[in-house]
Length: 408
Ligand SMILES: Cc1ncc(COP(=O)(O)O)c(C=O)c1O
Image (cartoon, rainbow, N blue to C red):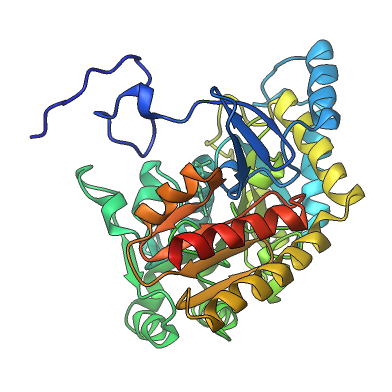
């Protein structure tokens, strides 16, 4: 058992961090504007990760702050458990449904991606319990998948290190290698009548930015249809313009039965997440004898929903969905040049999310980039970028030049 080597100077326990790391070694962000961050020493950073894959509209947007303030002055908080509702929750749900492939569907609201994914898994199991004799419980997950850290999402992850050490997770999950459709077909052939759902990100994000191989998502949809399984797309990163359409489902032309969203839904100004539910699944839930016995205290929180409405309006007004394609073209050119020069081995991505394979452990390179005032992530051999969709061309070039410097 490791013992603390340095005395903590704060009670704050950081997520995905060593609890032994002293507070003084963290970067204290005190201010942000657009795609720029400033720490407590006044140092400037380009936010190449939109915080944590979420700040589509950039930092410091008055329109969202004002919308939250207006909402809070009128109704700061109230719940949406039966019999209560509020205008902001209704409006944001309707807006999100309208942008999605399920305009006639329903939208469940929560605060975090983890809440969204656990709710989607529960709804899939619920519907399949009703449609079968109770035997359809298997959830198929993909290697490299990331689905948050509640027990359902932890179990659904295809990142082994994140599943380890917590004791028994949720039963009836099975894993297939990330892009191997044959393996999924084999699993369906063996267990098809017991599969409730497949869960997949359209583009795997936190696992290292892995776009699907040609035909993979379509094949997954086909297998689900053949075996009466539900398809869940986890759009927590891909949603709200990140892949060059409102949702990854639209970018790849594959329609899932359930879609989770979070992050870009409110650009993180206040926590907002949810699940978009197809009409077919909604019909099942709308059985007058059924009570949906799941939900969160802050489901439909009016201030979060006001942030979501203003954020969606901004994305629309500023053409940020299309802007993701421009960002993609610039990273393709920039990282392509680094590949031609032999500085990076490979690169992959789409729209506003990219990975540069540097052919060695990326963490020391990421740390060097922090030192240079450039925020990126490191996953295995890859440096990852996923900037605000308002990032300027010159800020994109700063990120690419930074990668060239540390990887060259
Ligand atoms: C695809 C995906 N699903 C779920 C989550 C979990 O979201 P949260 O951290 O808001 O619970 C994340 C977070 O990165 C994610 O990328």
